[in-house]
Length: 164
Image 1: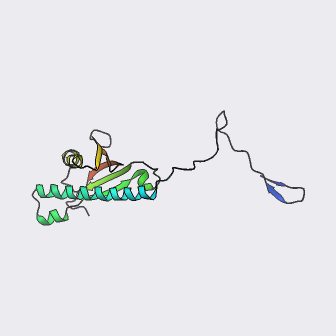
Image 2: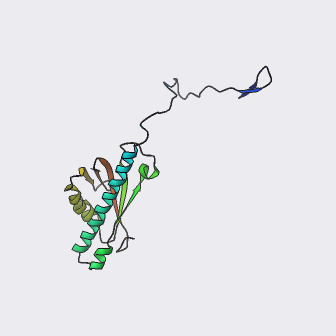
Image 3: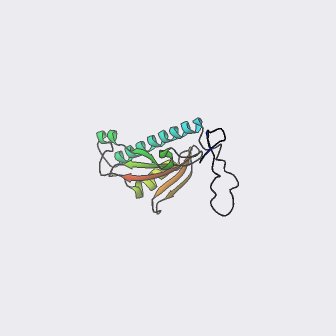
């Protein structure tokens, strides 16, 4: 809202803040600290994602070898980790989990290969704590902490023998 002062200049008057509800807010100040992770934590998250990517690639190569595929197929065998959710959008806070999706080839299944074999591989690792498979959830997930970073890992196979 603008008003004219006695000397003829226009001045802006601020409107009182709008109150929602019956009582006034305790504070109108926004949050000041602890909204973003430190550079060190961000680097650690990237490092953890790199480790998980290597683990799932090794797991798929192991399964490919066990199933009797050729040496060339074992060499080309692959799995890819994608992030999604608040981490992918860049709106996660410090200590938030990382939602990840592992995409693997058609011959690697969720029920046995992911929730049993990969679970056992992760269970043997010192870096992995609080490993909790949730195969019967609406969205089947394996939850764990890797070097203290919370991870929600999902699995999907695509109808290809080799994941690009």
